[in-house]
Image (cartoon, each protein chain N blue to C red):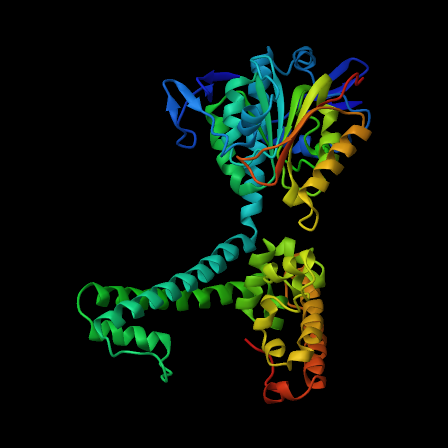
Length: 203
Length: 298
């Protein structure tokens, strides 16, 4: 990851969402992007020019554009048509983004398209987020990593965010994942947690 | 056999996928199995003759994905409900804007006329705005005129929403009126979403704050959301409203499904549903007497 002083940046063509520039580098704002917040608050996963990423819940392509600046290729999955329009525009300008309009809860929809990847990044507003991660780990290389951005308010508003956090970590562990890092994204994002895990020795 | 976007692979033999980009995208959709899944591999695709190298692999794959996404977006937007959704949301936002501006204009007017008060008067808002425009000069008069124009646009838009709703969701509109039907659809997120909702969810659509307050704390559950706007519900005596709302929501759930999957009015269903709702209204007694026998609303 590239830091200029204590500011996280990525190298690429600017002006995607009127982000601030530092010279030729695009400032990656932790208040706008949960992945950026993870790099500020925790360790995260180093993304290099060899990294292949499966990005679930690509939305408008804001964070996707930063990931694409670092990665070899980003398979960006988004379900809703409105944000997909924006994502397509971002993908037209960045040749290493493969935009896929599909439902992350149904990986069979994009199974014929996505090669094996080093990193699955998941940021979806769905109830069963652990299940989505487990099903999508089929795309993961041995010792590949998953970053799960847990939106506790999408799981169940009645439950305490802390309880949901614990349940999700337990679900991942019992599915054979090894949790490397798990933290709340405060002060940048309320009720959002990041879970970084690996699935050792698959296949 | 394993199927990928570039072709089918069996025992190391590869059959390339044919046709143009759209045909290939269509083929990808037809592959639905993920049993014994092995992710695709660009070297396999090169061996298959689908591409020259890795850069070419990504380029060809992107072409297919763009074509598929553009086609899917078009399909989703071509649904008749997509535009109705924007129309009804615009309408509701115009209402908010008109109310806010009217309140502000009245406060402004009161500064210019210290003796003016709305107490003990029943002046409707649009008459008040007209008075403000006529009796004021300068910017305030222009603002009042602008509010009047907005209100006129709003009236036209309401007619358009109602007409479009009768066309897009004929059964739901027949039961509860075009405007309210459109609002239900807008809150659900679309006609297909509405058609997949259980009646109990339709009953409290639009009462989100009350519903979540109920789920979180011990406050009572909401009995009705948007469907409160139906005369049968708001004219019913307070203690019966929940019952009427439940019956109405049940019929609306069926109506939404007919609208989504069949798309035409079903007179037999409508008659029986209307009878059931009317029966509910008359059983619950006095509050509904003045409206029974008036027949269907718009």
